[in-house]
Image 1: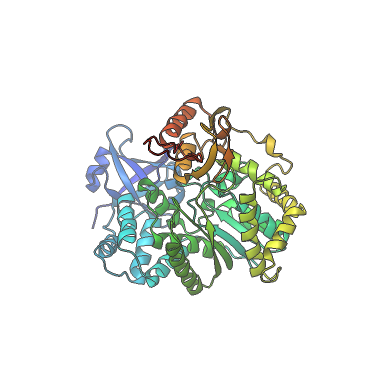
Image 2 (image 1 turned 90 degrees about the vertical axis):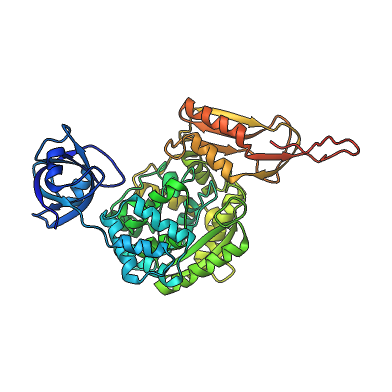
Length: 515
């Protein structure tokens, strides 16, 4: 049994993804810990214990004190001057279960629950979580394990329930510029269906739905505030991370982001645990397919869809899957402010056809699912709602309910002042737009942190262009970011233009020109 030692709390303004605590070297000797060990910090008045990484100092923390960041103080429900006990944390049993999965064995329900519980409680850190996600990626999980993973993630967080049927659309991502939710939510809500949309911020893309909506309104709310907005106007677009729904998912995502993996079992559990926790009963899953997407072929997409549908059925969520074209960005903009601008234009029927067609198509499926449109008539019903202006008026209601300016015009949205245009070097046709390159360049420009950063595409696949016409423009809020993006633009060449003349014979000169 580890020795306990009482110390006085002092909070410090330090932020870390993991709980950390600073103690004096003399206090460390008393409980026999070293820098990097895990300690159990226990608040006796609230009977709350939290595990934290310990950092040992000579003079930063005085003897008899523990310095902890505000998020750890909130978890412990302590304030400056409160007395807590510290001791070496016990070895987490969940590590044995992670090792078991790494060896290729199937995990039991209670073993999976223990892993997720320890992730939420901070009992295991980034290294152990990374080992678990790598095992998911390279060893995999069967449907029973994924169901257990989903339920464990759902049960270890907050839950929201609504008083009538709820609907949602979720995309697995992988395509830049996919701001369709900003059209779908107001279209569906205008039809009288309840659509409480919780969205993520960008992980590896230039903008998540929450990042884009944040340009127009607040996206961070408590569960009660979220429910109030949805019940008032029929829909909302908020950041799910502020609701503590399936919190293990947010922790795991931060670890996955470091090495850029997204295991199929974790992706499935992530989507459905969040939907369960948000009270969603009916949903459409969007699976974009094509080069440089998460599902590059139809076979992989259909396999994922079948697993998703089976898992949905086990969890009591009525789901349908839509497989969509994903070989180039949706619409012409990538980046929070640019996408918000384009979404508002589309709601006024002025936006690009690719954005409108995808949003209306997915909305139509939800309207059919909700019984407000007959089978096969959903698309026409959704398009009618959009063209009538009902969806735009509903979006203004949603923006106002979320604390934004409902009268904001697209041209009033501030964009990055540092800009650079790329021009067509020849006459020809655009034959390819690289999702991967667009993502990299837009993020280098500052998106999504810099809301005004991103990319405007003047041409997309199939467009005829003339030499000297602009085909792409980079926006940045900082000059150094613009230079970084331009450098990557020249290296990656995200747009390929080809002329009609490909080769002459007998000459070996090639005229296939790419840029």
